[in-house]
Amino acid sequence: MMNSQNTQVINLVADIGGTNIRLAITDKNNNINQIETYQCQDFPHLTNVIHHYLKENSLLDAQVNACLAIACPVDTDSISMTNLPWKFSQKQLKEELKLNSLTLINDYTAIAMAIPLLNNQQKIKVGRGKTADKQPIAVCGPGTGLGVANLVNINNHWYCLGGEGGHTDFAPVDELDVKIFQQLKTTKKRLSYEQLLSGYGLEQIYQALVIIDNQELASTELTKLSAKEISTQAIAGTCPICQQALSQFCKVLGSFAGNLALTTGSFGGVYIAGGIVPRFTDYLKNSEFRARFETKGRMSHLNEQIPTYIITESQPGLIGAAAYLNQIFQ
Image 1 (tube, helix red, strand yellow):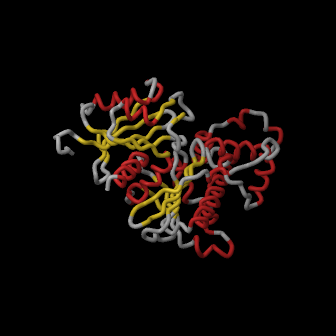
Image 2 (image 1 turned 135 degrees about the vertical axis):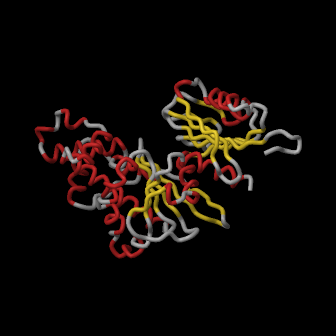
Image 3 (image 1 turned 120 degrees about the vertical axis):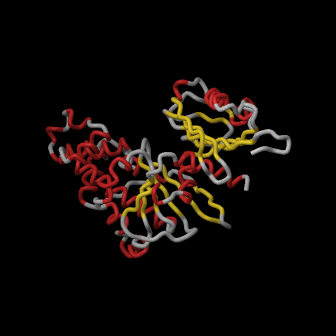
């Protein structure tokens, strides 16, 4: 796109995590082009990697509107990334890169903003329910932590309501939930859902089950399996305790997702994002995830109507950042 002075105007989007940064150019239809992925550790500062991208794509002379999705709080000018040594001022970053505009959003705001744009090839439905048009949407994502966000539609525009829903108190439902809760409470003052619904959480569920099943195994190497090893062995059927751990993980996720649905009236659907669940979509579909999602006492009839999906799109952060940026300039 060109402005009145024939200077190229571009929309730059980024998805910045603790390990990788993905950069791309988007258009007014939210199409994502020229995607590049860089290792964060290869650059001393965020300014350097964005400058490198613009230079490599011959865009240093363009007028750039940028929207950066980043895995840390963005409500102040001073930004300090949780898992990186990068620290910067939003104002200074804009000036150094000579950006036309700069918007920073939380990474889960970006994922949430992507949801209305996803087609059936970018998500997998789990169980029954039907999406209600323009109704609230909830998203949660087990990964390094447990991200949560909600979307509401006001006058045909989507707005994201962020928060720290993953840190709400874990509430046991069945007998095994109670046993896991009691075991983990021997070393923790408080248990949040994130303590179970994350990579670390799956490992904690497994370790608790090992101790519950056989006290003598508590100090062996069996208690030190990684989340990936647990899910891999569960799917392969080579480790009964791994299967039990992953099944319980799916149950707890169903309960938590069902709580989100009730809290916000998410008749637009509840979506599961993050890097963990897409590894075992079939396992989750065949688990008690949906049963726990729907089983809400007198309110069960409400959750029975609400659909649940797993996001399989590999770049939801970039798509959401594009949607956010385009909504600003509409």
